[in-house]
Image (cartoon, rainbow, N blue to C red; front, side):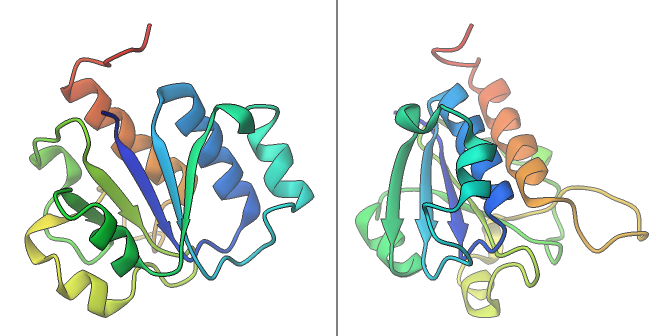
Length: 154
């Protein structure tokens, strides 16, 4: 098993590339939900992921519902600034899915409404609307890895 990061309609190739590199380094699955705001052969995307693309377990999906249907037994945790609970208040387990929305708008309201008990946020000041997508994904992923004892990592 492994953790999963789901990016719903990511827009910035460098963020997705950075997340892909993090996934390669941790054995985490990356799920990209279309439409993407870039082409997958984008130079910036490739540069951010460096030469680690061969080590990324990646799946493409046409909708978030497709991800949920394929992994019906999965636990989905949705990162949103609208969440009341901080990500460290949850107990994660191997195989969990961490879901993030597009950089400019976050997750669609209908997706958020479907998961009221699994909304997570990162604490921050009121000076900004949100953290960078790739930073947010790394923060939550590494909390999950910490909680599970960093399986398979040295």
